[in-house]
Image 1 (cartoon, rainbow, N blue to C red):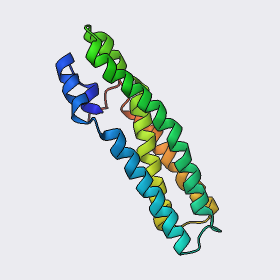
Image 2 (tube, rainbow, N blue to C red):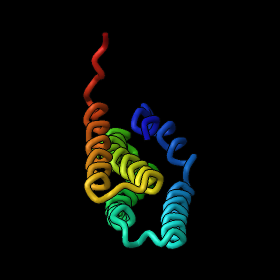
Image 3 (cartoon, one colour):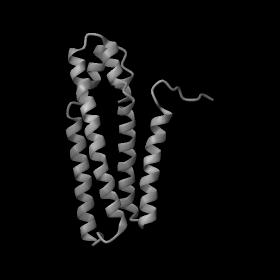
Length: 153
């Protein structure tokens, strides 16, 4: 995503877009594997009465609409890369802040879900982990927002 958004030419953008045509399929397969392994392990330990699996599944369900919105935007970028003659139009689509925001939020939430699966906390801690993961994704997005430059020391 970072390399795509830093592309300076139409050709460079097409290279980065062409490197990962199967990425959506791989992402969905990884998330399904994470979900199925979590369901299996929770069932094996009779953990459905605990809070963390319910919070993890709820958080996991939240990932779907965010990922779908990102997928629509990325398909629009791919279509534009094949038809746009003006690189500025393509660059505007590639640098949509939602793409980076969505990626950061989804990564943070998946890591939070993995932490829930590993630590198996109670309800307050589970809610805290999901809240902290969400905040971490938001902070990561804001720190590296397009147009902002990191502070130099």
